[in-house]
Every structure is written in C-alpha cells, then in structure tokens.
Length: 195
Image (cartoon, rainbow, N blue to C red; front, side, top):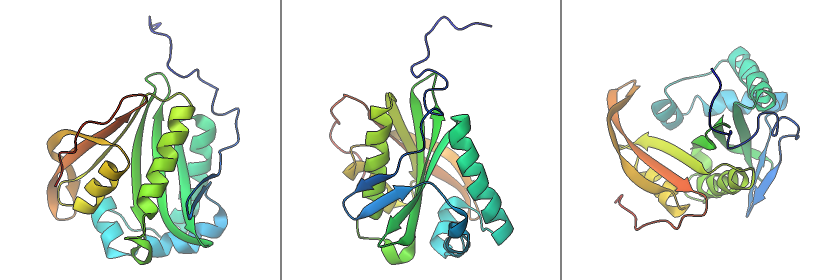
C-alpha cells in the first residue's frame, strides 16, 4: 500500500556513501573490522556490558556480528561503529535507522578501562551530529533506570528525558523500567529530569 507521506530520508541515500569515520576529541568512530573480533569477545566478557546488554559473545559470533554490522550499513538499517581511543577498542555505538520516519535509535557501551573519560558522551554526540547532518530529525535512546551513568551520558549530550517505560526490558536479573531520551534536530533541549 503506498504511503501518502514522503520519506524523511530517501531510500538509497545512505548506501551510496561509504560509512564515515567520525572523530570527536580523543575518540575515533570507525566501521567494524575482522581485526576487532578478539577485543569484541573480551568486551562482551565484561560483567557490566553483559548486565546492560544481556549477552556474551564467542569468536564465531563476533565474526558474524562484524559481518552483519557492515551489511546493515549497506542495507540502510543500522550504522554501527567501533569506538577507539589510542588505537584500542574502547566501546561501541550503534544507530538503528528508520529512514522513512527520519528516526534513529542509539545504543552504546564503553569498556571498563575507558569509563569516566567522556568516551560514551563523545561517541554519542558524534553520531547524533552525523545523523542530524544525514537528515535524521529524531535520535532516541533507552537505558535501564538502574543505570544512572547512561542517563548522565544522555543528558550531557542534549538528549532530553521523555519518560519511563515500565518493565520495558528483560535482563538476566529480571524486568527493568527504561528511561527514554531523545534529541530533536533543531530543537533546544529543555531542563534535565534525571538525577
């Protein structure tokens, strides 16, 4: 059935580009490579990453994950970057893309050795700015209400708290309420709500 609304971002407009490398402050975001597999496996072995992202990863799964991340860029469904600091894998940031709606859903993690150094904030801000320049109107994210560090990252980068989705995600330790945040291109952020 044909839509009566013109897509916010024309299909094919991202796949025509090579996925960009983004640099902000001391952080470099680049497409995933096969060389990242050992560090990716190690990252998903960290307890905090397992807690908030509810998975572990074998080398074979990591290889498939890297291949899927690169294929998803070409399919215009996801943009996923390895986050590097001083040539070391420090984190990951991914945007699930909805071109017709001009909306992207962000998800990120930072390895334990790199937390508290602005890595997640720099990566989130770099991807939000890229998404806005690519025509996305709304960039949104969710995090567990039990994860105040993620809430601080969202607020520092201009993502406004929009509310709480009760029992919004199932983790290994049970159901978690989820805070929703969004950054709207061209809209000034209101006062923060999270504490």
